[in-house]
Image 1 (tube, rainbow, N blue to C red):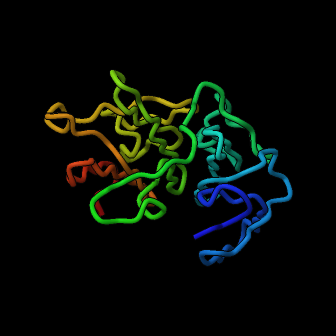
Image 2 (image 1 turned 60 degrees about the vertical axis):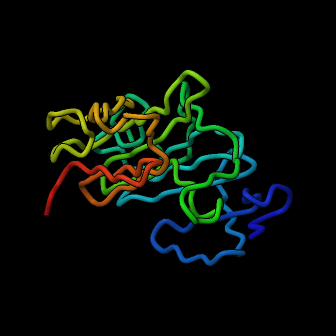
Length: 193
């Protein structure tokens, strides 16, 4: 599905009304405050959001009560800011099982007050999973209940990385986190209710 002009995996014109969002494939969603030109993916939490631009840059904004914006502060961020040092890769086809490439790619996710990002690796560098924000129920995967206002790497169980298995998709609920591995296994942590 072509969501915008140019690259069929990118939206070039979009808008966002924080209190209400409804869009269908093919819709153009303009965002008045966005400093980026093309958007590949976005996720909205209870009071914050993440956007992955088509060039791989990561942008965040929101209330920032727990550090969920990831800028190292607890100050509200009204206009999306780019998070330095995080590069999510340019839009590219991704095969996971029998899903189409456009449905399979999910590198960002947000819960009520936390954020998750999959940073693709390279030939000898594994894909990294990062989390930040509200950690009060263990949703940051740090084996504690601390918040973090900057991205912290999530270490997956040793057995999850056997035989070249690696994370391919990330998802979040209000206070829990999930990662889907390329071999079909699913790992979760955080609130279990």
